[in-house]
Image (cartoon, rainbow, N blue to C red; front, top):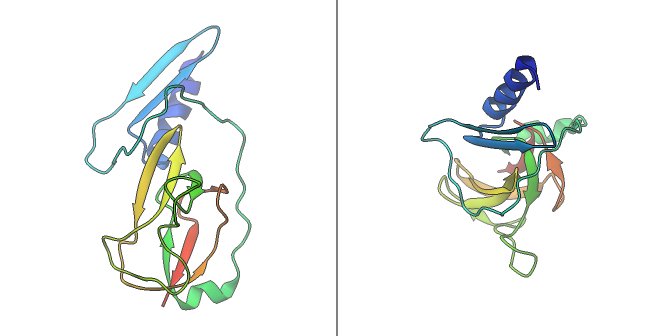
Length: 143
């Protein structure tokens, strides 16, 4: 493993607002950790996984620009509920405020609760359950 690859991992951590990253293969076992007050760990799975496949974001329709948006604060997998058996955190028509939990984003087996950070009514959910999302990608449209 070269230093450029480590620098790339650090940059990806910062872009995704992650505080901890672990990577292990036959040649190397590396764990990166940084201290910050911006991250909340909800649940940890035993085996971290690193995906190096690029995720592309398709252009969103222009009509979403008319409402307030809740955007992804990190790269991850979108989940509408805490488990497959649970009710979704929000659905179209629900009213939310800045402290409302609207979804979970899973990044490297860490499940991060995402808050609305704004008030309004959910008028559209722009992503499907289990879909990969990118940093700053619109997730919900509020009115």
